[in-house]
Length: 263
Image (tube, rainbow, N blue to C red):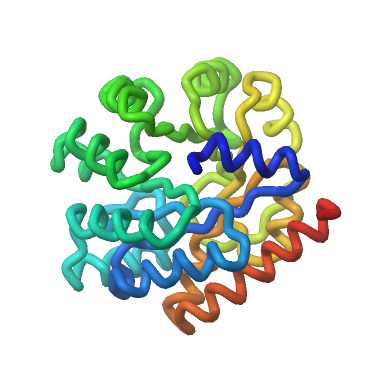
C-alpha cells in the first residue's frame, strides 16, 4: 500500500491518520525494525524513517541525540536500505524516508531515489530543500514513483503556498510552529486560517507535525488536519523506556484519535 492508497482508506472510513517518526539505527537497526512493527500493530498508518545526519537543522535535541548515537554506532544509507528491505517483508505499512539533501547528493541523487523506491519506500521528505530547488530531485522521484513530500509553515506566503501546493504529492507536511522539532505547547486553533488557505489550494491530505507530545495534543491538531505526525515524543520514549513504551504511547494516540472522530 502506498501513501495515496492509505489516505483513501482513511478517508473512506472517516479516520484520522497517525504518522510516527523513528530514527533509523537508534539505538540499533534491530530495534528500529521492532519499533516499526510495534507501532503498525497498534494502528500507526505510516512511518517516517529518519536517516541520521551530522547536522540535522530541522531536528530538536531529542532527535539530534538519536542521530548522533546512531552515527556513532555505524549507521549508513546502505544499512537503512537493508532495514527498509526487511521491513517490506514483515510489514504492510507505507514508509517514507526523512533525510537531508547532502545525504542524497553524496549517495547520488538517482541512485538514492531508485534504491529506496526499489526497496519499497513510498515517500521522500527533505526538509532543507526549498521549493525553488526541488527540480534536482523531483523528476527522479516522479519516475521512480516516490512522493516528494512538501512543507507548509505558518510563515509561508500566499504566493509560495500556491507554488508548493501545485507541486505537492502524497500529503502536505504542515508545520505547526517555527523552529525545530520537539514537544511544545501549541494553540492549534491559531492554525485554522493556515489550514483553510492550504485546503483552498490542494485536495491532498494535510498532515500536521512538530510539537505534538500527547494524545490530547494529537486530537487538537487533528481538528484541522487529516493526519498528525509524532516524532520527538516517540523518540523520547524509545530512548528512555524502549519499544514497549513506544507501542503503548502510539496505541494511546490511536485510540484518542478514533474516539475524537467517532470511529
